[in-house]
Length: 441
Image (tube, rainbow, N blue to C red; front, top):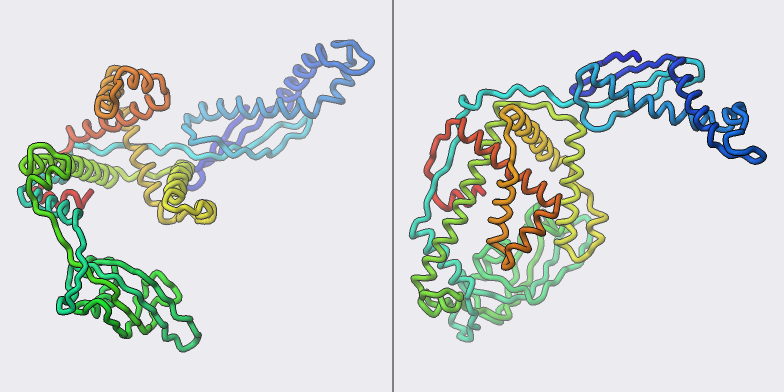
């Protein structure tokens, strides 16, 4: 075997492999001779068929089998000879395969990039720190209070609509487009709260300070981002009729409210539970924020040329997840089939994931990080204790699921890599508010 290597663009490589005709023909003859010992043909006992007839009938198929075996074996040898680490399967192209001529083919593939990790001790990463204040607890209680709103219809005509009121309207929109005629469009029984951002601000502004039963007509230019593409960016006449106005009635924040929320210990107990919830949410947000900051810095200090094949595989994985989410959002399953995956929008995410995967794998290998069986056992026990009543049965089920165990092992290994990086980098603490922390997440 002779093999020469060509460096193509980026990480792409091409192996030019040739094998002497004698080696190919010898293997074909050897295989035909073994076949002749057991082949059956009319008029002959098994193993007694003349070799010439065996060759005539089976030489073509045997040749194909031999060439496939030679490609597989010689490709592996050539890769070892050149000390390469291919990504995925190669693209094979036969150059010469005629009888009694040397057999030649090319194998084109990508290789994994060489990674020389930057010194982690030279990397600075901002680490946000925050705490839950009384004002954060009060804000959450107020949101809970507003979620329990009751609506009371206003019957006094002297009481005009105001921000926070719920209105129920019908409206007709008549577009004014010079170059074509568009029929008026009517919506009935539209219900929304003034000032909560549900409706277009310019549309709802004339509905402040009116009474139930009133009608309003006004002209507006619809925004270019309007969901109805036929109307977007055009002038239109609006005719609105107000059917009903309701004022919000909010419950008091007291022991009764806590009881309604199924919380023991009265209002103080509710405040305590809210604080615990916010602290858990904050901890999760801070961890996610710090992890992202670490990953950003790791990429910044270690730019990686990613194999196209790996990006394609990641894009396919993202596409499957996107299609599933799309299908779950719509009752019309045709959406899943007809909607095209926005590949360009997801490509940066795919490249980022592949780059991080390569960098983290390099850290695992360089520092010999690994997960012990007892770590997997403990992780499963922790997961089970939080969600299952029959813990022993649940643990055994999870341990017997090889795919689930692999997922948990991968999760633990990622956590171990993050912990290792954290132990090496310089973390610069930066105080922020609870709100800023959860918004970052």
